[in-house]
Length: 261
Image (cartoon, rainbow, N blue to C red; front, side):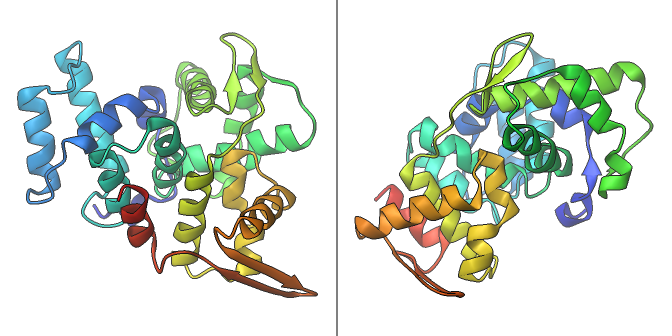
């Protein structure tokens, strides 16, 4: 099954298994581009070079990575950055962006529900609130692989909130609270390149819903662009409805190489 055909599938399996930030980083750091994805994941299962605590967890890691990523194609820059040792704090937001290319549920939850709560001034969020949101997933353009039991819905709701904690958007164990999240400068620049690769015009890029993954409003994006323009890290100019944006590199792949040069 092609990755693109899964774009609207709300997968309970991958959400319940979690963000797997450290595991993904370790696997990508050891990735061999000369081998196929299957060969790389077979080597992971055979050698357990990430030190997984059990054979079941090791199998789950391989399964989730297989479903989430396309290291030879779309996700290659993310793998290159892990291979070259980009600090995890800068790599983590990029992992989230790449992950949500194909994880409908994580993307929709962060862009719609969590950002909506944040933008509406909520201080705390609860699992029960997320369970209500999950009841409407069909109306939001998502399809589940099978009907979810009440127990599965609870686990998915808890899984989504835990992911938001793992990526630094929330904190807490029982009641989750928003934290003031700041996207590292180089991560922000990488995402600008990635969105431009999707052929977004400068004004659409500033207004893109994808910034909501990082709890950023268009005004926050513009503020950061103006700051980077001031420091000559990029060129950003606005005259009425005309927006001009020039980035340091021609593509995400080129910028990723510059990040670790």
